Length: 220
Image: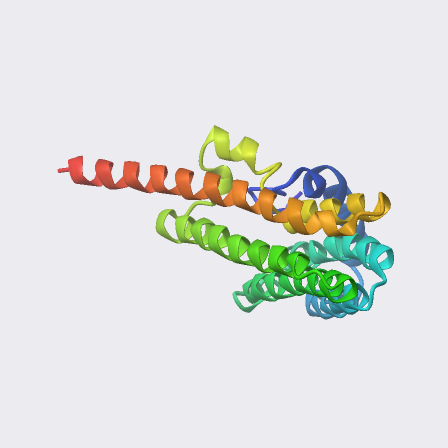
């Protein structure tokens, strides 16, 4: 479909679950008066409702709403392409996405620490945010240097992107541990997932960029 990005969805939840729902919704919205900016605003309003719900202890409601936000988040870009309304300004949306992603982790970690008197959930949240910031910078740096998304650069990256640390998969951590009555464990499992992703991205980006540098030096 013309409104999908060339590289497609990244993680397995976005690819196998969100993608068909988003495509179905865009096909029905593309000929309406709904604009991509309106979808972006609605997504951010819903996203910060999740933040508030986490911080006030409504964990299951917040978690379920986070999956709705995940679908909504994919609509604005696809709708912009479907309506031929895509702009450079629209790319700023990714920065706002990262901001509310961090607010979810911080709000959940903060609530769990405040309600239990144990600082470790908040430490886990800060650790996760730090690691996510690092590997996102590695990822973005690679794209700027090569002009190609790391997700599409080589077979390993195309496979790893399905399980790499992403907001959708972190939401699964949270929901799973809420359902078994141990939400605090998500503040340990998410940093571990983020640490694995950070290590893989750092090594693979370093490897690819070094290889490109060596090729450039050998070129006449």
